Length: 522
Image 1 (spheres, helix red, strand yellow):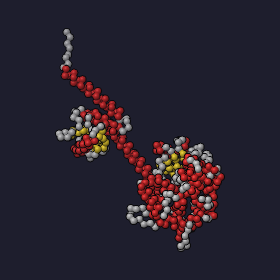
Image 2 (cartoon, helix red, strand yellow):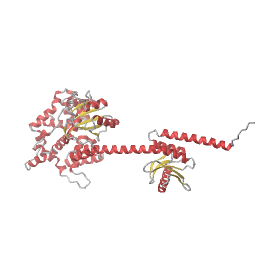
Image 3 (cartoon, rainbow, N blue to C red):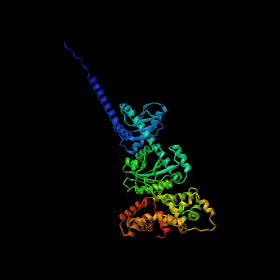
Image 4 (cartoon, rainbow, N blue to C red):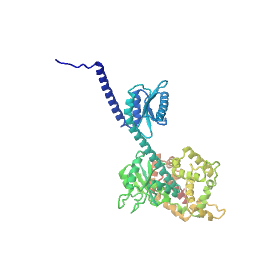
C-alpha cells in the first residue's frame, strides 16, 4: 500500500514566492555590481534605485546635507521636497545613533534610511515607497554604494591635492618671473624638489589632453629633479625647470646635433611622445628665469620645423649693451608717470602692479589675463589706464611697445638705481641717444645679420614691412602684395633664419624694431 504525503497549497505558494524573492534579490545584487563598474557609479546606482523603488534616492550626510542625488527622473519640485524630507530624516536618525529606520509617513512620505559604512557617517535614503521589501534592497545596495562612495571621495580628494599642488607650482613660477626669487625658493623647498641655483628651461608643446601624462613622464625621466609646471598661459605648453645636465649644452637652435653621454631630456621627450615639440634655453642663474623662458620660447619656434622636433636656443636676447647711464635715465623718465602714480582707492593697482601688468601684456598680449590671474575686462581696464598715464596707445603702437619693453628691462636692472642717482640734474635722455652708441650699433647689426644673409622671402624687407605695419599680419601682407598665408609663411621662414619667435609671444619683434631704429632703416 502506497502512501503519498500531501503538501498544502499555501505552503507551495509560499515556497514559490520565496524562490522568486531570492531570484529577484540576486538579480538586484548583480545589477548593482554591474553599475559599480561604470563611470559615475554612485549617480548610476541612485538612478537605478529610484527606478526600482519608484521614489527619489540620494545620499545624505549626518548633518542633513544632500551629498549626491536625488537620482531618477523626477519633477524638480518633487525632487526638492524629497531632498528636504530625506535631509530632516537623516539628521534625526543621526541624532538617535541608529543604523537604519523608516521615518516620516503620516502627512509626509515615508523615508527609508540605512547608514553606509563610511566616515563621516553617510545615509542612503529613498523617499516615498511603501514596500516592506525596500529595506532588503537598501541593505544590499548600501554595501556596494559605500565602496563606490569612498572611491569617489578619494578621487575627489586626489584631484583637490593635485590642483592645490599645481597652483602652488604656478605661484612659484610666477614669483620667479617677477623676480621674487627668495619667496619662490621658500615655497619650492616645502613642495620639493628645491629649486636649483642654475636652471635650464624646457618649453614642451604638446596636446592639451596629454599634459598630465607627459608631466609624469618628464618627472620620471628627470629622476624627480625637475620643477614641472603646466603653463598657466597656454594650455598646450608645459614648462620644466631642470638642473643643467653634465657635459655639453643642448644642441644649437638649428643643428639638432646629438650630444655625448646619456640621451638629453629633450630628445627623450620627443622619443616618448612624438607629437611634442621642445625648446630649450641656455643654462642661467635662477634669477634669470624670465630670460631663460624667452630663450626657450624662441627655441620652440625653431623646433616646430626642425627634423628632430627639438631645438636649443642659439641666439642672444641680452639687451644690457643698450644700458649705461643714458639708458637708465631714459627708462626712468619714460616710466615716470607709472612710477609716480598714486591710486585714488586702496583697491586700485599701484605702480608696481601696473608695471607688472604692462610687462605681462608685452610678453603675452591678451593671454596676460591668465598669467596675472585676472579677468580679461580687468586687463583691458588696466591697459586703458596705462594708455592714459603714458600718453600713448600701447596696444596699437609697436614703436611704443618696443620702447616700453626696453625701458622695463633697463629699469629693473640691478645697477639702474645707482646710475640714475649719478645723472646730472635736469638731464633729459632720449631713445635715439640710447640707440646711438657704438655698442648699440654693433648689437643691432648682429641682430639683423641673419636676415641680410637670407633670401628675399625671409629677408630684411619682409621684416621691415611687417614692423612698419605694427607687426599686424594682414596689413603687412597687403603692403607686400601677397596673401595672408603667404605672409605667414615668410615670417615662419624668418623665424628659422633668426632662431627666434616672431608669431608667438614672447616675440623678438621689439628687439628687431629697436635694431632697425638704431641703424636708421625703418
